[in-house]
Image (cartoon, rainbow, N blue to C red; front, side, top):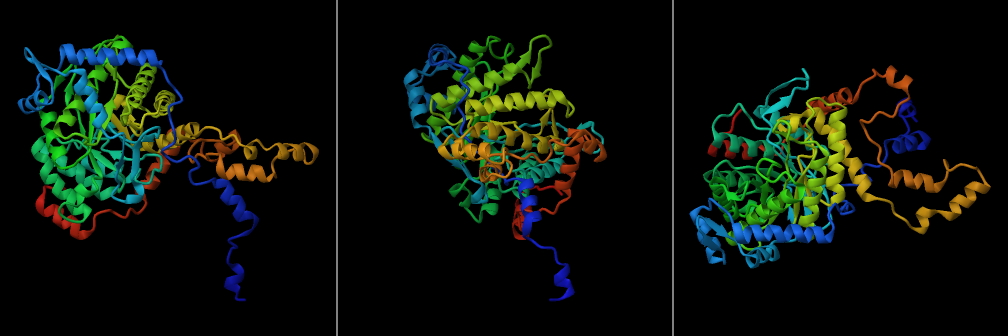
Length: 507
C-alpha cells in the first residue's frame, strides 16, 4: 500500500457515523405536510359567513364590470341591477363545483412540481417590495433587477420554499413591458421551481408566453406543462372589478396559465373592521373572482387566494404582522378548504424593519397559524420585511429555517408500538439506565428530529468564542455563502440568444 493511500482519511468508522448523525437527516419533514389542526371558526360560523357572502353577491353584486365580462356573466345566469351585476347563488355554486380541487403546479424541473389542494401545506414567496434591506449596510435602498436575480438564485437552494414569486420590483426599469419581461427572464434563468409573476397589461402576456416556450423546449411546450402562474387581483374592494386585471385574466386563461386570484381587502379601510364582516366581504370578493374565471373557462385551475390584510386603525397604516393577521388568514384558509377550493393565504409579512425579535415573533406566529389551518399555498412566507415594503437576503435564509420548524409541527407525532417502545423502556430501566445508546434513539435521531443550520444551540462560552453572532449575523454569513456559490443558470446559451432576439432583456 502506498504512502498516499495510508494518508487518505477513512470514509467509514465511528467518526463518519458521528458526523452524519450530527448533521441530521436532510429534511425529516418536507413541504406538503398536512394542515387543518387549527380551526378558528365553527361549522355554524363558517356557514353564516358563507351565507352573508352569497347574499352580498346576490343582492348587492359587483360594480365596474367590464363589458366583455358583463356579457359572459349574464350569459351564465347573472343579472343586471342598475349599474351593478348580481351573481346568484346557483352561479357561484356552479363555479365552486367546476373548479379543480387539486392540480399540479409544475416546476420546469418535474422533480420540483407540487400538487396543491386537499390538506397539503406548501410555503412560498410573494410580495412586490420596492426596497431591499442591503446585505452590506443593513439599511434600505431601492430594489433593482440585479436584486431580483440574486433573490431568485438564493431561494433556489432553500428546500422549504416550494415555489417562487417575485419578491421585489426592479425599480430601475421604468417601462412596464420591460419590467414584466425582465421579471420572467430572472425567474427562468435562476430557478426551476414553480414560479409566479404579474402582468401589468393584457398585451404583455402573449410575447412573454413565447419566451416561456423557448425555456420549455419549443412552440406550445409551455401550455403542455405550465410552470408559471399569473398573480392577478381582479377585485377592487369593496365589491368592484378592476378592468386591467380582468383583461389580463382573459389573456392568461387563453394561454393556459393557472390563475392565482388575489383578494387583498384591508380591515377598516376597504373592508369592515369587524373580523366576521371582513371575512364575509372578502369571501364574496374572492368568489366573484372564481365566477369570473368560471365564465371564461369552466374548470380552469385557480388558486382561491383570499388574503385578509389588516390596517392599524390608530394610524391607517397597513400592518403585516399582528395576531389579527394570523387569525384572519387562518380563518380564510379554513373557509376555502371547507369549500373544497385550493386555498391561498399570506403570512410572515412582519412590520419589523430589522431582523430582530419582532421580526421572528411575527413571522413564526403567522406562519404557524397559516400552516396549522391548512393553507394550501402560503404566500409572502419568506424574505419580506417592513409590511411588504422591503425584502431581505438574510430574511430568506432565516425564514427557510423557520418554515422547516413549522413543517415539523405539522408532521406531528406518530404513535405506534414501535414509537411507544415499551420493551425499550423496560430494557433501559433494567439495564443502562439511559437511552443514549439505544437503537430506538438512533432511529429517532435519523427520522424524527429537525436540526437547524442557523439557530444557536451552543453554550455561552462556545458562542462567544465563535464571534457572538446574533441571528442576523449568522444569516448574513449564510446568505453571502449561497450568493457566492456557483449557480448552474437554467437557460442555455441558445435559449438566451433566442429570448434576447425577441424581447427587451436587460444586461
